[in-house]
Image 1 (cartoon, helix red, strand yellow):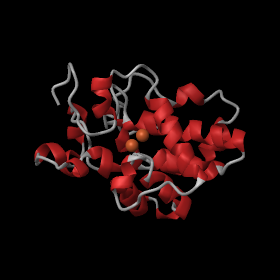
Image 2 (tube, rainbow, N blue to C red):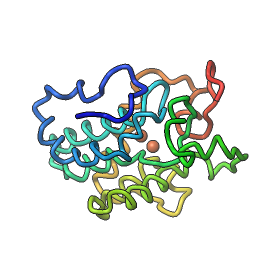
Image 3 (cartoon, rainbow, N blue to C red):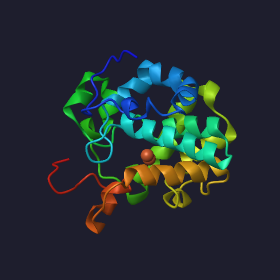
Length: 206
Ligand SMILES: [Fe+2]
Ligand SMILES: [Fe+2]
């Protein structure tokens, strides 16, 4: 695949999985989204620590797909919901690379304002990801994929209009998202950053 944007990660995440026996069948499901210009912009979005939204979303999608396969769940829904669960528009953390994109992606930094607790990223980004997925990839949407995207931050989703995960795929995405994100010990004081309530952490100025 040719990419328009140089990824902020030092490696191509697809290389982690390309020799896996499940890679080809997974790739067939997600390739149109991966090849789209809009999704490739996530190569420039900084997610947890030093990982792009691109890499994180691919990890969640592929691992959810394999988990679903091994447990007899809906593999297609898990692959798509995993890929789109963090497909929000307004970047959460600023980076130099984002200046290559339209200002709408840096809206939080161009027009900063003090947010109330329930307006913070951890509560709002699943809803933004759902709306954005409906806009760019409506042909992939169904009830379960939408629920999995919008409730992946459960229990924070209890404080939004969407409330509870209501299908197996939602629980898979919720579990795998946390599993691939928390691959090392997170100090308690950094937990608020992990759940999207603040971007502040030691050593970062944002
Ligand atoms: Fe998320
Ligand atoms: Fe995520």
